Amino acid sequence: MAIAFSPKNYAIFFTALSPIFIIVYLIMDSAFYANIRSIVFIVGLLLAQMVGIGMRYIIPGNKKPWIVEGRSPTPEERASHDVCDVFEDPFGSAYLAPSTHAIFHSYTILYFFSGHFANPDKPGVLPISVLSIIAVLDLIFRKTSNCDNWSGLVWGIVIGGIIGLL
Image 1 (cartoon, helix red, strand yellow):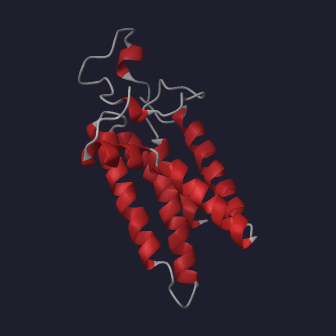
Image 2: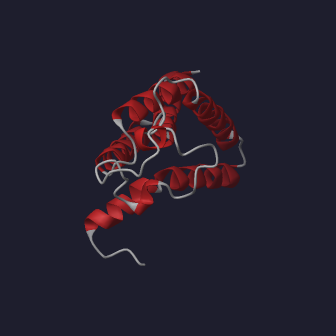
Image 3: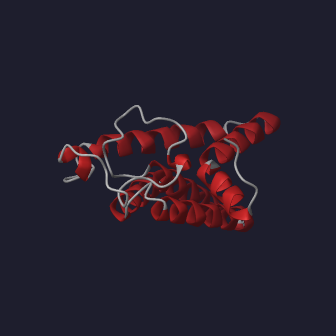
């Protein structure tokens, strides 16, 4: 079914798919300028996501309650939007934390922040601002749509942030 025309639906679409759009932009930018910056970014992002996947099994009480209890999710627990997971999670959708989107956004913002502060000309204010707005919108959407809970968002921000600063 097609997305109904409304600013809210377009905002949901673009924020939910923002990790894909940002990665594609970075790859195209590196291809046009013949550098390896996006490869360095993606290797770090993959490391952050792998750490996040590993943490799913370590964080105590991290399984979704309806899976632990062997029941169907209640309407309050069920994700209220189809765009919560664009692709099926091959590593276990039974876990609440960490949020892959929170890992992505915090890694991306802190990765760009570290480059911004290392450069004496400070060229990255506008891109970092835009990325921050996109991240906030995406994380608000994910929380209000029951895609992620607070624990998942906080764990994702911490994991992505730490690896983004490395």
